[in-house]
Amino acid sequence: MQSTKQAVFALGDREYGFDIMDVNTIEKVIPILPVANIPKNFKGIIQLRGETIPVYSLRRKFGLPDIPADDNTRYIIAKTQGMLVAYEVDQMKEIVELEQDQMNEFPVILKNLNTSYVKFVSNVGGRLILALDQNNIMAQEEEDRIKSEMGIVRNRMNQEA
Image (cartoon, rainbow, N blue to C red; front, side):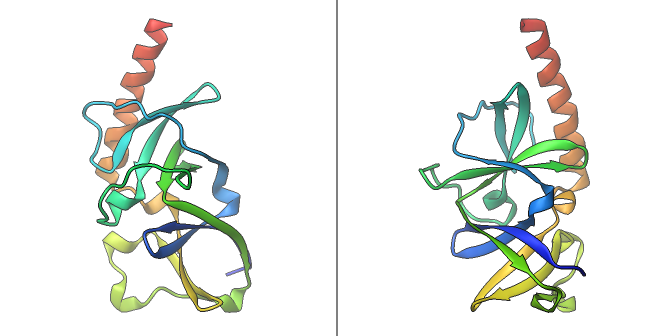
């Protein structure tokens, strides 16, 4: 592994990171429009700079209860499997540069299909950070369903315009 810069964010009392090269932008709270028939980890869609983007709750993915959005809530917009996704997080913390010797393999005993999105673990000043691969966060069924529903939503919006 080469060195990397991670966009570090919090969900509850845990910290995670996305490779900064995979992040398009980080946005404050934008009103979410609910959409029927989307997978449970999605909260709806947002409109951002002419794009319709699904909002994915990492809290739901990791089994944490929903909390109301506040001034710290952020959407990390990243391309996932060819589509833009807004990952809702509790708080954006910082950008950290990690050298190869700071990146530790995710423990083999914890690796399985449900954790394939963890790239590596890092200890930064006593803080444990899980680096995530946004291309593996969604289950294939979630990805297929949201792509289908987003196509329907975009068609409706184009017809209404």
